Length: 64
Image (cartoon, rainbow, N blue to C red; front, side, top):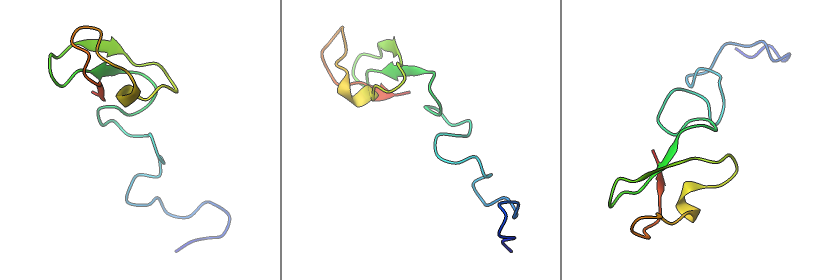
């Protein structure tokens, strides 16, 4: 039941919003990982991993 003042019950997602939680890839830290060779590169805030090519084999990285 919403209270209208932002103090209603916490929703099913825990109320943390997008980018919260403890799943891999959550938040600004972590690594970008190559799905082909496994090379890891430190993730940089504001730079999506899938826009970075692996320095070892050239494939696109994923968040990991």
